[in-house]
Image (cartoon, rainbow, N blue to C red; front, side, top):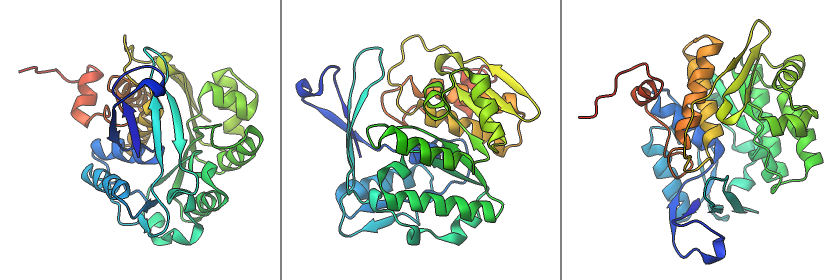
Length: 305
């Protein structure tokens, strides 16, 4: 559960917050559902008003949530944003021993994963606890054993675990992924590399089939064993909120991939949705439906009235 301030500045001076949902995996699920894909999401939620709200919102966005478990003992985790003009917001996490951090391998419905085309994983869930880490690794193994592609966004959050542990676990996951979405900073932490081509080449050598290195406003560098491209981004003059842009990027790329688009087009979708996410306050509020995406990319005419 996210509490977003209605004013900028240090959180100690903020009086009012707006309630919304947050979560990298749920962001990707919602963005894909808005683009017309069938998406399922599973986690653990507290048996409290926050948990009921999160489940209702995600379900209302068209995401299938039947495998989201209600935990009778643990509470739903919360976080607060602290925003400053034209800079990335700070995030304060209060999710230790939350319902989601108690996700465990036996919570996984094997048949549910087997039905999917893609299993999307981020580096946030394995950072929450040992049981979450074991659950993620089990889900990946189930996917790989049944021909389900694994998509991975490292999404490193050093407020949740130390750098050595993060590096070890995330590289283990990366070697099992088919598609990976690292940023430059993540490339430096995980691989000690900062050049997009070097990062992409290294992840390809580890076994990934596709690498899309996020470059922020500059777009991305997308590579496979057959081709590689720098794809320019979309300029947003005054971004409102950058949180959720990376999740929108992943969803855009996966949408193109599901539609069997060329690598370049997948990356264009990714760049566009990542940019659109920054135009709206909130993690997932800026994700478009497909017609809005086409208009933003200049592929459809905009009719104002």
